[in-house]
Image (tube, rainbow over all chains, first blue to last red; front, side, top):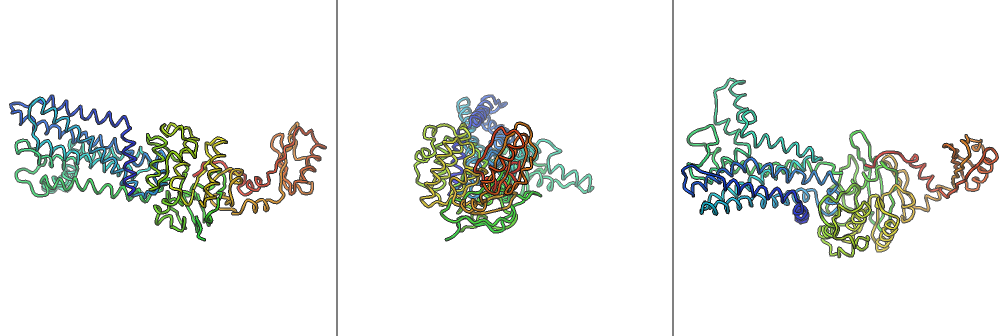
Length: 280
Length: 306
């Protein structure tokens, strides 16, 4: 199994990266500070603790993708650029081993770096509120790690798809705008774009189900919707235009499927491009 | 006996540039084969094709009887490679890099023994990326030796090495070859290839122009020799071309380079030159192989190796 040796070499190297330690520490500190300063209005300590995790989920939605991209965009393209790839491929590794090994290494790293902030936040919550909403904290934490993993997978895939780090980071930033910030900026929201074309250009009657289905395709929206699994009804966010009973394809479980697709499909595409390329 | 390396019609184009053209190369098992040519001749491209770093435009390559494109992993299991253009980009020590190579090859070598072989025993615990170029080259060589491969593929192995380093690498190569390892190495320096190789293939502009033993090459170079005559003032041609046995006269500043069909003609050329101008110095070397190499490769050309 040379996926293992590729991943272990990558992990050993990353562990020595000071930037990574600094970044991971800052993330944990940020979450601890957020948990410390959060102040719920007229809430019991338990409700407030739950609300802390709801706020953290929002921070995760924006910050984890950036952290994942920064930690992963150079995984393959960097080795190509600096010549480490020559050694990787001189040893008995297939290109698939190299790709999967790098992916596994960065995922392992991300799993730790993305879980620790939740441990920090839960500890802080326990310390100052005397209570931890264990189920909520656990679900939010696990979903957040998965959400971060989606972006690690995406960034490693883009890293493999491009020969240079500069192009890999450009593509990753573009992906961040389209897949994350589109949840905030209406003119980037694919559902909103479809609505404009649909109603203004095609002069059709509004169809919110269609727009919601399209908006739901971004990992950010899927993550926000999936988050509702972790909270009682009064703390759930209404993510879609559709009101009342949501159709099955907009349910939080459907969001999990969309996140899984984002985890799986980019590596397939990225690897195929990598496998076809000249690597010297 | 199967060939250690065999290519048929191997061709690689980068856009409009032909890097390797219709290459039929055969390296026999157990020999030390020197792959010679100027920068940009297509040596590294060929090696990159053999290792499936890049994919051929046409033709095929087999290494140890294995199709290089179909099953690169099996090739890499049995081959030790010192690639060109590598980088020790991860923050690992020399020993950790060697460990990694041993581990990936599933070998049982002692990393310290390998490091000692290449003269890095004292620097094993330093970060490889802080090594000098020559030390990195040694480390790359140690990684290539891991797992006692059947074939060593070394791309410009002497790059950055000091004379001692070159000498000890040469000895290691000879030892491994005596133990049955096939060695395929590229170089743009004739003397280096001459010193260790059984056979030589000369590349130029993407084509293999000759494959022969060193002795065979010497023979085809014939008794050809050249003499450099340095004059007090720019001499012009001095009518040396009229001497029987003189193949060419090339003035370059104050120096005349005279190529002769036979070493004995050199004296005639020098005498004639001394009659007609003020000769300051005469440099005569047994450069027959070198001039053959220069002829084969159009005197080399500028440009980067691909």
